[in-house]
Image (cartoon, rainbow, N blue to C red; front, top):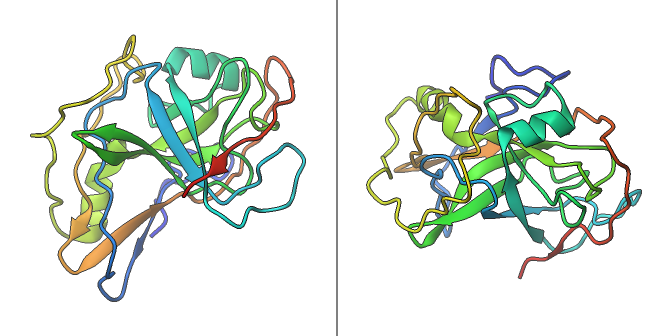
Amino acid sequence: YVHERFNARSSSNDIALILLQHPASGVEAMKIYSGSPGVGCSALVAGWGTTSIGSTALPRRLMSASIPVIGFDTCRSAMGAFVTPNSICAGNTFGGSSACSGDSGGPLAMYQAGELRQVGITSWGGPDCGAAYQYSVFTRVANYVGWIEQIMGVSAYSVLGSTSGSCLGTSSSEAPQGGVDKGLGIMNGAHLAVLVGIGFSVRRRSKQNRKAGQCGRSLT
């Protein structure tokens, strides 16, 4: 189920659902992060994409990196108008680890109430992974809870009662005046809805073009 308002040019509404025909065994759905993560809070990005600029080689292990959440205004100033209230950004201002080509559709996760919860879906970024002033842009999953429930045909269970351990950061990462549907889980008894991004369809230049080294580490 691709979001009906997905725009390939801007990567807006870059979210889709895969509904499994049979129940998944041995796995547990990751809940959606409740509320808006604070600016500067550490988030975990994971994926199977390339690990250095210009490389086409893909890793044999799932890779991950810890990157800080970036404020909406800072990200929009660096990355442009395609950053919307439905986006959340993360990355190192002066370069370092980041999502890279091939990571699209993977999760951005943060700890809340003692467990990892999904904050975003890797969507797009600058042309040079890990370069200064080039942030990774993710779909803000909490904004799509209503859409997820509509596709699933049932009400997802709430996790709003357990927000202990949330990182408040220095300020909210939401856009000014931006509304958010608060976080809910997405597992419905027998079937698991898997959140995926649609594509790394946008590349643009940033303010600076500094090369960075390794974009991730092995997730074991």
